[in-house]
Length: 364
Image (cartoon, rainbow, N blue to C red):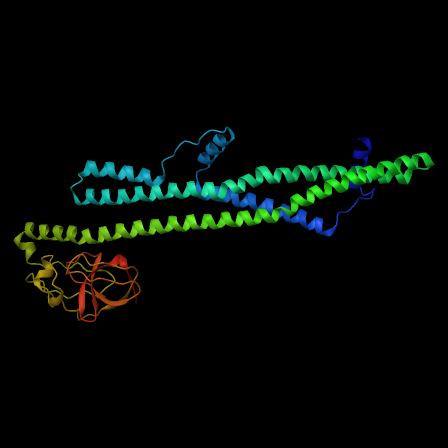
């Protein structure tokens, strides 16, 4: 043992020769170290992605170390859904706001459930294999590397003693010990080499796990996208009814003096039809628009101009007053006084009807 530490100290001080490993072995060592370092970083950052709360991550880590089941935790989306549902019950589930809160809350619940499923799938199919490598294969590799390092120090110490031996008997004893230590070193080098070459299999396994992670993430985002599209369609179809009813109610409850002045609300980014502030008739626009009912055949484009818009998503018309849309198509749009600012009049050839602004990209 004294010779072991002496050899180690002299190597550090540059006063002793060191048995060098072959280039292939050194490359295997470097590749293993690189794999371990990047696996740790990817594992830690994926854990942050799946659980941004550091306190929750520490709690899950402790449960795993204690070999206990991690308690189920409500996702942020599910918690938001709960609050929205409770708020809707307080405000009145039959009111426009309450109905919308219930619809949005249900979508948030579905998003939260999808997130929970994604986290569970990613943990099993991606995080667990990475963690098993670091806590299993890598620990074995590290252990065998330490043994190899000790065998190499013993070998070099025997070489040093052989050089210093003067008497024939001392030389013979040193040569015998050198042969034994060389055999042990070669055997340990072979064991370590086989483990290091197994890193290639580790890469193959991690590649398969990475594909499964991407597939889980793709399914998760696809679900979220579909949930939001469904919600957007629900809100789009009900929004016209809500604002139409509000407009009619306001018109009926308005005083005679206020009724002599037509509404002049228009989208800020689009040209509006000019109005004559004497009677509730809008120039170029039939009275049915002011009453909340749109007849597409009676609507005329404003003289002040129109704009072009690109459709972002498919939209299915809820009734004959709306215009069905296809993603990426180009249409002409304009606003009419008294319309809900979240809706525009869209034209495509001889077809026209109301279209939701959220489905459009307005072009200059």
